[in-house]
Amino acid sequence: MDRNIRHAGTGLATLAIIVLIGAQALGAPKYSDWATPTWLGDVVNSTAEDAGPAISKNGLALYFYSTRAGGQGGEDIYVSYRSSLDGAWGAPLALAATINTAALERVPAFSRDGHWMFFARGAANALDIWVSYRLHTDEDFGDFGWQAAQPVSSLNTAFGEAGPSFFQDDEVAATYLFFNSTRPGGLGAQDIYVATRQPDGSFAGISNVRELNSPFIDARSSVRHDGLEIVFLSNRQTGSVQGQLDLWHSTRDSTTAPWSTPTPLVTLNTSANDYTPYLSADGGEIYFASERAGGLGLGDLYMSTRGKVHP
Image (cartoon, rainbow, N blue to C red; front, side, top):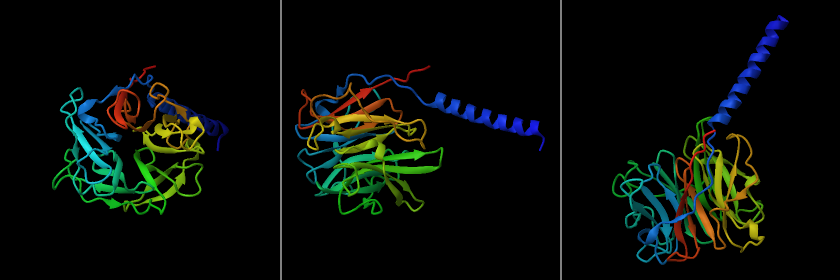
């Protein structure tokens, strides 16, 4: 091959890589700091514990678990609706017996298309991950709403699995479920793991996301829609397994790159427990539970917003 042609081809390949990296950098959104959190009010919150929120893709349905009276078990999953993005939340409704049982049901999370809901079910120290399907993404009840849930047996162990978070990576044509587990071999009391969804709906290739975990509790992660940010709860800062829970986050340059060293979300955390975060579809809102002063119950639901920063 002619040397000039060979060098020209190498130069074009290098240029293509530079352009790709530049496009990825430009495409990665930058955000402002989180604003002061807003309490979701006494229609949504109760004198019991309200936690584990998840917001629908269109922002009009808020799901969470609660220990309030009137449910099927000690913890049940509820949904509250609003008619517009700036509308008031309506009175929460308990999901049907296809979801709620005499066991504990907590921390729901959704597939990108809104057809699948993953959540934890079981006893406090022996939770498993379950999944339900609905035909219509704007219905929670009836024939087209949530169908009878099934355990995700490819993820569950005799220990405890909970805190699911669904991430669909279009760049590599793969879908992942992040979750936390108390299974042996982790770094702490609970660790964050990730698994890849298979064509038959099962999950395989379970791995410990070691760069996110600590010797303490790391759980209830939520991945931004582009896969470049993750938020989760941890009590690592107190240096005690029984210590205060705070909200943490980590970022990465691409969906195949390692996560950065996690840092606390200082504008959201208080001296009380702040836990179970969930990011909105556009990454501009975060919903979470907190035991801070001013609430009604053992844990209340809050949200915060942030804006995109343009270069």
